[in-house]
Image (cartoon, rainbow, N blue to C red; front, top):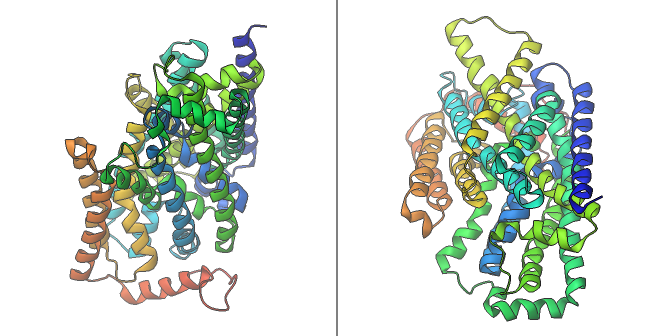
Length: 507
């Protein structure tokens, strides 16, 4: 067998495993929205942790981040540092309360429905706006995964960019369509384990091949000593912008929905430790891969595309079949994110838009099974649009992710934090903050200003300030009932002294 045949065999094996997990999830999923969209709130801590991490990182972890560090140096690792801090804070600050509050607030299964029920918004405007923003930004986010998959097949096997992209899109869409949230979560676990194994193996074997850690560092210094500096080549604003990626975690629907799916709020600390440990190993591996690539290739053979450094190293360091499994880790990172985002888009289409429109227009109420079929149609539609946007391989993976990440973080992050920790938040305040954050992030990101300062900083700050200011100037609807639910959510989260795992309250 040729090298490519071995590698293709490994990738085919990976595809078969993902489809098998999707089928298993399909058999385990109840044919209603709670089962399809949230797996009946039954995720164990380790499943939620690995699923959140795998759905978060996407192709940029194995291609975008190593490529940025390879091209510029350790100054680009501030993105990873910011993400570690942001992820830890998100698990600590938001996870227990969000799991508790979504149960107290009418058993909400999506972020828009949670905000609506948390604030008692009978107008449904807030929920509709949130659903539209989710569909808008996730279309670009899913597109980044499609771009990464096309680049993967082009670089690894010489397969046409478009053909490779369509293959990955088809398989991911297939197991997501039928397996739902449980399918996405279980495949995330398998994909997360494959990703961390690959990111540990590539730099370790690379260092051994080069001749040790000191020889590797000498190789990097021979290219450019400043590549080993966390500050060289980056202005203060550039470093702040990179670290500010951590702010985005608070508003990513495909990540925080894992908090809502935990078995109980008390599972959050265990999930946090597992998730942050996995993330740390992955980040160190991604940075290590970039440095090994610099030392291995040197200045005489610079890669034409820095984002392919992980792919290139895996093919020269391992037996072709093992290299194929390592290459499959790239697909794992890409597909885990795409599947999670498609599920969130589907929930936005059905739970946050269609149901509200049907209620207003008098359309016939569908059966639970029909809603699931409609949700699967939403998955298909968003995937097709994302594929069309990804037809141009010139799009940068990191640029597409950065745009969507800032949009979600700026729009939803402040609203989620305030909804969980501040009783005084009003519907008008939340709506004004969400619209402001999305608008500022979009406008800033489309201007030349984003080259100086990442748009999530002005977007997040403006959203937070506007939400608080407008809330203080407007009155709360059903303030007494909201206060009672707030108190119940705090108690259910186990944050009162002496309360470890209270009995869930139905309010």
